[in-house]
Length: 212
Image 1 (spheres, rainbow, N blue to C red):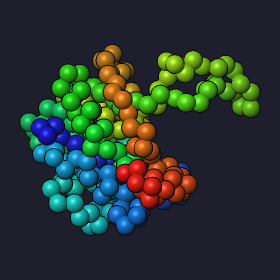
Image 2 (cartoon, rainbow, N blue to C red; image 1 turned 90 degrees about the vertical axis):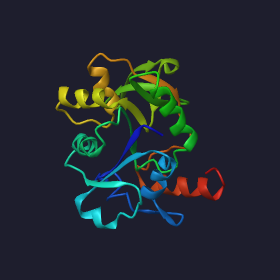
Image 3 (cartoon, one colour; image 1 turned 180 degrees about the horizontal axis):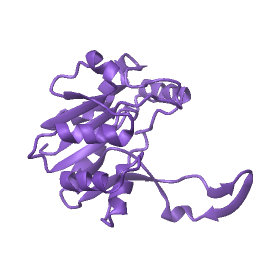
């Protein structure tokens, strides 16, 4: 594909209890599984912790060091892209089971929209709480959970990062802050994010069941 991709794998994994990029998932490290659906992309950048740079063995990927915050890592990835890359997908290595179909949906929508995120509907009732008390029940019909990869016009993502110095777990939020529209496409129910050790158990079960 003509678009580029930045695969972000430079986090410390504080909620998990340690870095996750090279955890073994049924014989393959998370970062390798996360990279797989982007094999057809011409401009591929992997962002790792500096101490992990020597562990990366992904042919065709440019390997760069991340920064202290997620946004710093994304900015480092942007600097490594070819100058002519007009559209970039940003993906979390912590979502190792994202499908090629999901990547294709996001990339195709990026040809029509300046920013695109995959979204899945919420199944549970959602309540706003303060401490131990429920404040209100939200209308889940208007709420979605957002995944990666997220796609952006490269110049728009650069402008969004320049315009807001705060860190973020979602680059689309910075684009929204500029007043730019963000489109959605159907997400992937199995593109789950590894946040806790229990999430790894779930992904292993999905793989063993042939869901990926």
